[in-house]
Image 1 (tube, protein in one colour):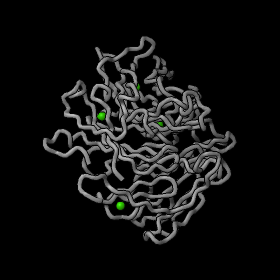
Image 2 (image 1 turned 120 degrees about the horizontal axis):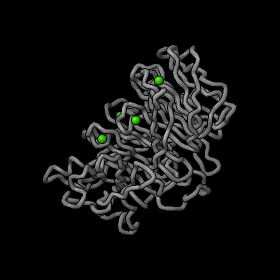
Image 3 (image 1 turned 45 degrees about the horizontal axis):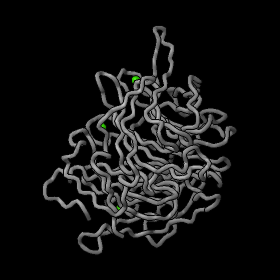
Image 4 (image 1 turned 30 degrees about the horizontal axis):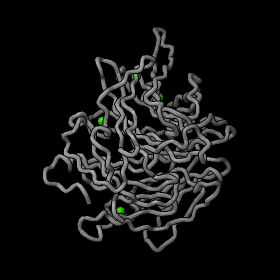
Length: 435
Ligand SMILES: [Ca+2]
Ligand SMILES: [Ca+2]
Ligand SMILES: [Ca+2]
Ligand SMILES: [Ca+2]
């Protein structure tokens, strides 16, 4: 398969003019470009870096179509333990192989490792969490389903010709998505935190215990109920312990996270959101929240404030509300400048076309916090616009090739794509840009 490079002109990749919103400390830069101009599939992206975005922190990505089949998400892990990363999406993992001929794109070897239900226009799998749960040296995958109401651990058989053993970790409740978090405060995110789509499901996290054949997942309950669409983990109050954030408030972690009482602080109502990240956006020492409307319009941050008496309040700031269904949001230092950026994208047909704006163009974006005359604003950069690539349910930002630059991967109903970060390659004269 030949890769398709993105023909986004330099002027469209980033934004010269920054539009300030009076209502908010945040600003959104620029408008999406004309789709016809922005994404002529098959055109060649050779950008010499001399355009208007040169030197403004923009990154260059080369788009690869990995697969045009159907999924809801994707993940990255070393599935075959050869020291190189593979892509997991839907029923398959994808192994990168050399091009068939010089100048062509890499080939992708497709390995089917499981059969998933397909119903209601969804493949019933909404997260893939790579974790070597049985310490075999090979990545296992923990997945979750909405319709089948399960969190499932798929054990890597180590040999390509063997089936993956599946073990149900939790049954009985629909799971919107899940991710790996550091509830035990060890510095390693190894606990599963699901967002249950049923208010009667007890809010819980899952700890991996035992080794090898004895490895298993143990549930720890935080609350007897769940709190709506969206979930996150991070240290809200700065005590060094990872708290759990729901759309309706946050749970303060006790010293003994397994057996202690988690204290609920119903201090906000975020609405129907996706991942809720905890991050001190404005650098004032107080942890803020960054999240997105999973089925409506908007990417937001919520500023934590404290009055003289120590009473906490939250102020909403709009980052961008010009496109909808930002279900997945990744917080990462994408450009390596020591500052965290946001990577997100529009999920294609999150609710089969019923969500607001669901028929508007897809896009994949990153947002860079910048200071303009002392004021915090957000600069939007396009990774892709108005093609088949959308944000899906999770967006891995990983150095897939070992180049030293972080790549962006997205998988959804409209296909699986790898955006190779070629920024450094661009800065090396004589390097071939198109493959
Ligand atoms: Ca590998
Ligand atoms: Ca805490
Ligand atoms: Ca702050
Ligand atoms: Ca950065």
